[in-house]
Length: 122
Image (cartoon, rainbow, N blue to C red; front, side, top):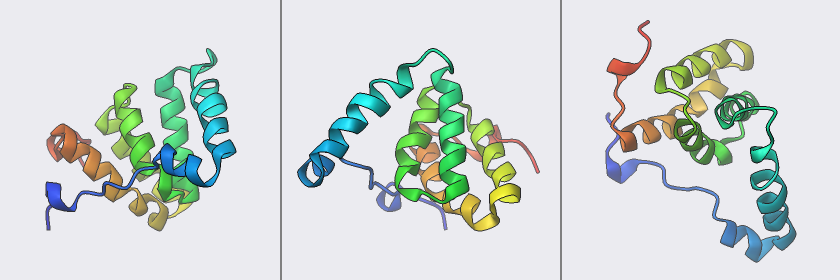
């Protein structure tokens, strides 16, 4: 079954919702994660994106997949690199963890018109 626009995952973290439940968590996220961590000079946003997606997948933390996978593509990570990342992590963190990121990654690919012809072959 192929993904269509009607069945793509759309659930992303909404910081308005976070602030309505945990205002300090929303503020600390905005101030320290978005405003500080992602702007430090030690790593490029591209490299931070790769590390972040890898950590989320390795830990099976699905709530961040859509946001950070899309951010990774925005920050210069290629679809081929994301594909290889998921393959690599399957061996180290388990097949279920790698497979859990497929739907969010596929949704980002569909949204951007990325197809399998641009991905590494088997």
